[in-house]
Image (tube, rainbow, N blue to C red; front, top):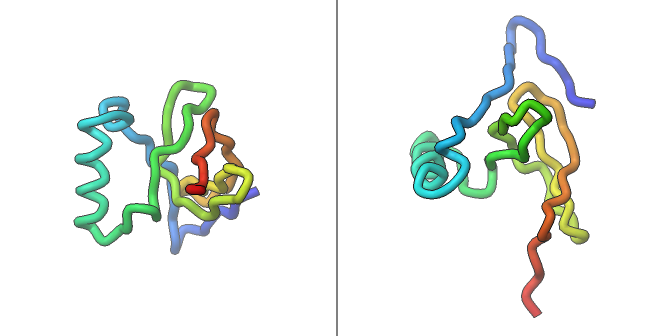
Length: 90
């Protein structure tokens, strides 16, 4: 499970607007985050949750089997397996 920070280091989940899930919105979101100092591989739009929302997540680890370890902005980490995992170049 993830950690929760105290009042001095507050954290919260950050939800991404549905228009920013696909192009051109995701490109604009990525550009803006990069302008704020985040690298292209540091943050991503997470998978849909049970309520139909997507979190802004930190990419913690890309595993060889295609699984991703993501962390929500409130510190909760989880493993996500994309339906079509990225293939490695031969």
